[in-house]
Length: 324
Image (cartoon, rainbow, N blue to C red):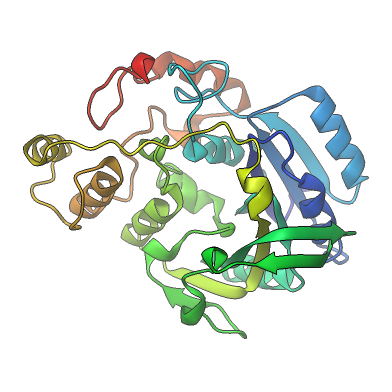
């Protein structure tokens, strides 16, 4: 039976508090709410999968899979150490997903009451949606229900004032970020998924949102699809770094022209994160620039072979990955 939704949960942490997701989701599902949860695990081991399968206890379908090879982290990396590579992990989940609609849910988080009701509306409407979130400290969770936590202003969702307590509201593509986003799987395949140009930098979620707008999609923000995320666990034992190198202004403009973009589209520093903005807005293309594969053509057996097409240099400044 095809599930109504695939919930894709990627993690590289030794302790991502996966049980929080399991219990908080299970307590919201009703009869006929057939979902699958796929954990894309950068620290994959059979023992972890067995432990998490026991936690689910047959309440919904579950798969535990390794993250596909990445030049920036994992056993096949080309860099000297591990770097953040969310696009690669999330695209792994898209290959394994069986449902026509997918959600990407952050680790170390709890789905608050009402999350699934709002998520189900998004599925039925076929919209692209970003859920609300709050990062906090001292979270204590039992049976999927939040017991205590401590708020801090640093964890406030910057889009909160844009939202509505009763319904999803339309926002720009750059607002597609946060603890949970959802979209039709076929639409994501059409734009070739998340762009690995963002790996080691970040920003893969809003980058996708802008490209989806170029593809004709409307983006929504739903405060009812709300999750809380532990800032303590986020900062605990995370070995993956982010890089945002800079170039002199003249070299920056020359590199931008390599992508067919003449002139800045977003003012700011001459760093890689701003070039991501300049490229996506300057090209106006819904497709990816940094993926060395066509996602719709990949199946589970083909994921390992993507290592053969790894780039050898950082795209921004052509520094060899072996030197990073």
